[in-house]
Image (tube, rainbow, N blue to C red; front, side):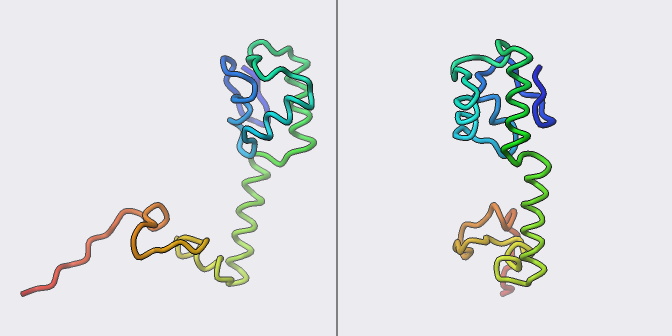
Length: 122
């Protein structure tokens, strides 16, 4: 099992897919890393040599912000918006959609499970 950026990537998957298990690396970035290092996209992680895994690890460490650092940067950006009391920061704090989506209906992912409102007494 190869360990890159603190994550155990699966050995039976193709290199491109396995790299996407790392937070901050998607398909496009994984393909770019493989192209840069001359690794065939169809190869499996189990087929990689230790030297190739080391080169992948060094490339990711040098060129990409991943895992803990990326999460910390994202959280600090959100905290900065909240401290500034910007509109986006207030929406983050309230747990509402940040990018202008409607909330009259939908928005259940951000707002959470619907809470019933007491009915009107007769």
